[in-house]
Amino acid sequence: MSAALADLGERLPDLLIISEVAREAPQTLEETRHRLSGAALAVVYPSNSQEISDILRWAKAHDLAIIPQGGASSRSAAALPTDARKHVVMRFDRLNRLRGINVANATMVVEAGMTLAEAQHYAAEAGLYLPLSLGSEAWCTIGGCIAHNAGGVNVLRYGNTRDQVLGLEYVLADGRIVNDCHGLRKNNTGYALEPLIIGSEGTLAVVSAATLKLAPAERSSLSVLIHLSDMDEVILALAKARAHFGQSISSFEFMDSLCLRLAADEHPELARPYDLDKPGFHVLLRIAENHENTGLTGAMNAWLNVLPTQQTCLSGERLSEETLWQWRHALVAAEKSQGLVLKHDIAVPIDQLTCFIRRAAMLVARHLPEARPYPFGHVGDGNIHYNILKPVDADDQALAPYQEAISEDIHQLAVELGGTYSAEHGIGLFKTDLLARYTDPAAYSLMQQIKQVFDPENRLNPGKLWGERNER
Ligand SMILES: Cc1cc2nc3c(=O)[nH]c(=O)nc-3n(C[C@H](O)[C@H](O)[C@H](O)COP(=O)(O)OP(=O)(O)OC[C@H]3O[C@@H](n4cnc5c(N)ncnc54)[C@H](O)[C@@H]3O)c2cc1C
Image (cartoon, rainbow, N blue to C red; front, side, top):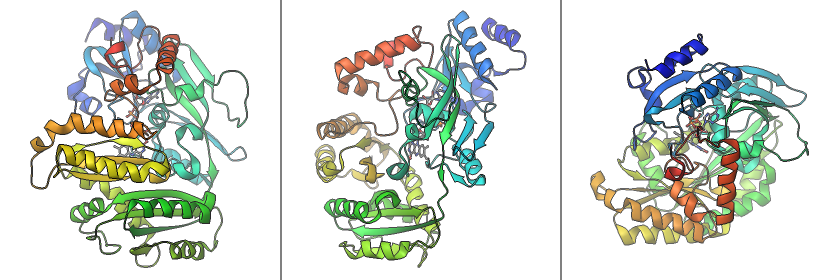
């Protein structure tokens, strides 16, 4: 054990410290898609904010950096340590308590290491609803969702993580603890710091706890999968859904027909909603109400009647709502079965979606005509995961040489259409160049100044957001 770790052991005798990281905590060095492998001096597991503070002071004394890590489900390698001598991973598995639920205030205070699924469960036990929902909810943490400002399938109705957080407790790089876990929906008292920390990817502060806003429990819901011919019809369906259902829409998810065809191959056990072999696009819409017996079916049928649908499958008729959503969740595994995938997490204004899908397909074809676009996503928020699979029967090498040029074009197109190259997955290690290139120069320099104020020695998650500009 190094002298630095021995010193930490003396300062905090009860702290769990793992120094043989590759052997004893290899999962902390893994990136979700195995594009990079990590390296770290140690992993530490604080159990309260005072320990976090002590660890940060210790890191300063030994000139080390802290890499906050929740469930390590980041799609941008934002929690990956990359330096075996300088990087200490801080995990929150021991900082995962429920501090309380206030039903009258409709809030809960949870510690950063609680998984999203657990937090949802506690809210439901109290008769309330935590609407944040992601495919990784079983293992991603509240701290990770906050640091990434995660989105997910319910953004349309409830907003993203930033909209669910009222107060935060966090620890600054110099060890000061800010205890601002308030549960106020109104609080106009100077600069709002929480929104800055939310989405900062562990580069400004370590979050130790949060007050989350809860919604009334949903008591009835209905989902429908529909098959449409083209993107214009998808946009029409969204506009009509807004007009018909207003705030009752919780999700409006979009899937290319290739997505569902491959999901069917990968999951032959899943009951098919309808003929999945036809070309076109599919939309999975979910509406929900806070009371029972709301006449959702009548409203849904009225919406379906004004759409040019090719096929429909309404939950509760042939398939359950759960099964319909299993199709949506099956897309990630189906994609994984295809080898190398080029991933893009773009968003454009809704009125530009048709143009984006058409032009993106042309751009891909210009590089490699046989490559297969596999777009799906939270299209109700303008967010598409515009992923690209290698040609059928080709190996990964067929796609690899085009990777950079294709991604460059897709991101450029999104920005040109008034959109973004990172809708919900953040910047992490992978998009630091894009942040520098596409951010307004004045805004970029303001962001750098903010980093300086919070973390002048660049001790928190170095390399993320800023890349080598700020690498220690
Ligand atoms: C199958 C799958 C589906 C997904 N679906 C979605 C989706 O629909 N929408 C979406 O937005 N994302 C999605 N993601 C991405 C990811 O799950 C989310 O971003 C999630 O919020 C990350 O949480 P985590 O605990 O795993 O954080 P990590 O990956 O561990 O860390 C993420 C970032 O947060 C920082 N961090 C972690 N904890 C703290 C803390 N306590 N204090 C300060 N910083 C901290 C890390 O340093 C890092 O910068 C998905 C990922 C997978 C694998």
